[in-house]
Length: 254
Image (cartoon, rainbow, N blue to C red; front, side, top):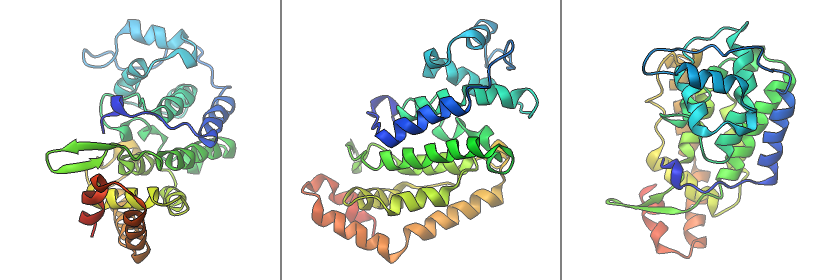
């Protein structure tokens, strides 16, 4: 997905979820320099020093992407509190469609994996609330891009689901949010995901997950997309959208 071209859709629910994260994780202040990899392809000392003192809301996506790229290790004693310090800014930047990563969206939050089992409930609720709010807001992303094969949606909701799966989030809750969304937007995204969704490229072991876990998630989402109700919503979208540029997406989904 070409994030530089995507315009964010900040709904009241999404904005509230971001502010809730800032409140819930505010107690995780940095006590000193952050833990990072200082090899030539990761983070410089100058960048680490800056991230260690810069106010959270002033950290840019490109700067936090350096932290994403360089934070290879993980432990609950030192690195997890540092990650929790940065987490609200991660969610804020993702909400504004500026994910802090040099790679794919799912790399941003892979270190969340396992949070639902071990983090305090207010923190779990804050992350879960953001995921659901971001999925809901993303449904209104219906702008098209012209490719050699025809028009496709600019915004790939499948990437958002992949991020949630990699983070160990409740992807079934995300699917329920999509199911409860409006037409024709939902039918259009369902059609697009039938064409584009692929969770098989998620790295086994990323963020503490495993190949079987991602395979199970992929199969579940695949089955969810093949339901008859999904076909009906795609047909409904076709009848509601007065723009033939969407026809390829909708027709190829069958």
